[in-house]
Length: 249
Image 1 (spheres, one colour):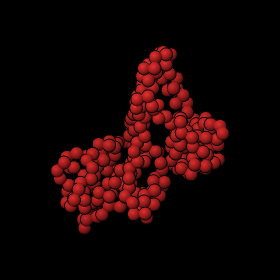
Image 2 (tube, one colour):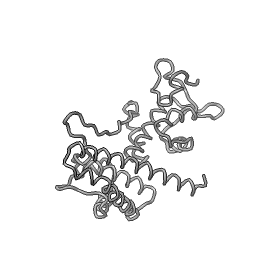
Image 3 (spheres, one colour):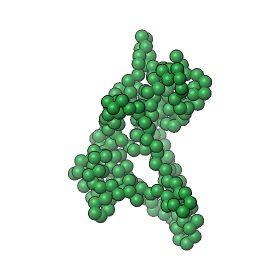
Image 4 (tube, one colour):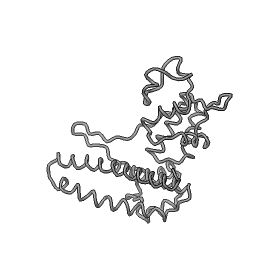
């Protein structure tokens, strides 16, 4: 049975109520629900996640996939964890298995936001104080690899051995990349590229930063966030375009 009404028209609609809770969807309908939030998702991606054991849709007698709303929730959890936390599929699968054992529904973590209310200072990843043991537990990084990342300047430990929130994101991404065969030495290009962007953006921000006006400094912080977001989008699109060419797509 296909979903109808507002939820079917709006790919980002929340789970319907009542009897439609058990509605089953085709892979194309699932893709339509996810595309508004995850525009790069493809049918091939959904099939890959199934092959990796992240989701297990039902099959009709003819072999067609039929997804439940719980399947969609799992997929949204997986895609969010990949996009926002750079978690490897192994770690995501373990989290989902743990939720299933505890009979919990997959709850998509909210994306971190930076919000200033009144005179309250905006949240900053640099304000986090994460001990080394916590970093290792959260990322699954080998301590030898962590030491190598610190020597390369990819991760910085703040005395007396604390890390900030960005260090967690960096290590999670590196752990994911190493699972595909990359080594730490291959990541120097990322550090060099980031340093060049920092230098370029610093030139753009310098006139605002030099001003003593608090409003100008607030504009500088907002501009920095915009530049980071645009840079990430540009980098991701360039990589996608390059890989598409290599894959003959």
